[in-house]
Length: 266
Image (cartoon, rainbow, N blue to C red; front, side, top):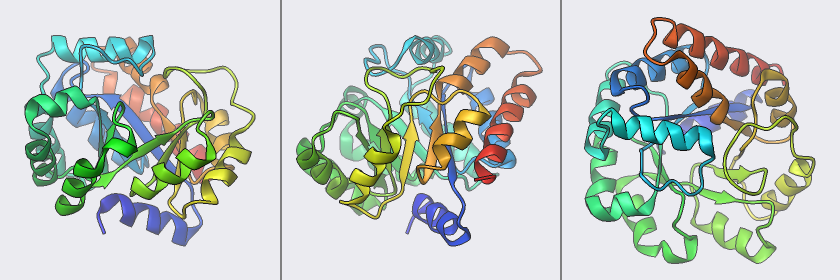
């Protein structure tokens, strides 16, 4: 059992919902990524998703695309992100999931990347553009390294495909509650509850709901339906606003703390 499974197991035992937070690695730089990761752990985040910057992030909205660009401009590479995870692991055991495009893994070497991720202290990988039907080698390598392959389910995913996706997934299922690319939304999608019920017909894995949650009220509303919520663009937006200022870590971690508090109230 790795850290993701342990964390969700502990949450279930207590009857609590989880908070999964996302940020782009290297935005504004990797030292800030390390400091933010530790601060997020302190204020109650349950899982940290780290986006490894890529020059063609097709599934990302403008906010996360700009974060990837800033990460590339700060010199962030997959190897440097792995080193940063090692540094985070000196002070924190927060479960970490890499959010990555397949092209980066292909360039690095799929087997080598998975082994190096496990050695650094990563717990799971979500490859945005790898269909589960084409993931047999990947799933086997992940199992050998004790990592969780995390997969996405969308509102448009047909029943037969949901079954296939959850059979390949471990740790948790990431339910994308809106169609299209990532980004903050003013309203929470209305079909979340029924879709979660559909997914749970095929799996006991926890379901984390994301894409669009931008404030504590929305976080609380969605947490009432899922096992966890995912907040990304709203956090990335605050990181962009703060940049390299002295207020970066306290301001963004205060926001994450408010989300964690809202989720705990459910």
